[in-house]
Image (tube, one colour):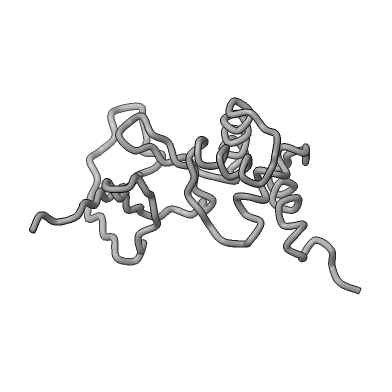
Length: 143
């Protein structure tokens, strides 16, 4: 007998259970778009909304935002902010740097092993460094 939870169609439900989230219809639909194929991805709320509607899912943009926030809160995705205003949500929750492709607004993973941070400034008194986000901005060279 095959383990049902290991089958691709149940990956989303398993992922939600890992985060302790109740598998509502909308959460399952969005989770399937994020992790259903087993690959990591970077999405904006708007791109996930468009993908959901492209699949015929009835979900509002507000629900997509709220669901992504819930996924962040339980550690299923991490938010990566570019320019202080544009948020991407990454299903790869391990610490790693990113490339931001300015010409087309994409965010992709950069190889973590290639990044070397020699030193960080001391945190102000009473504070500790919680995380360091590295976003390397790319644009086509002028020729």
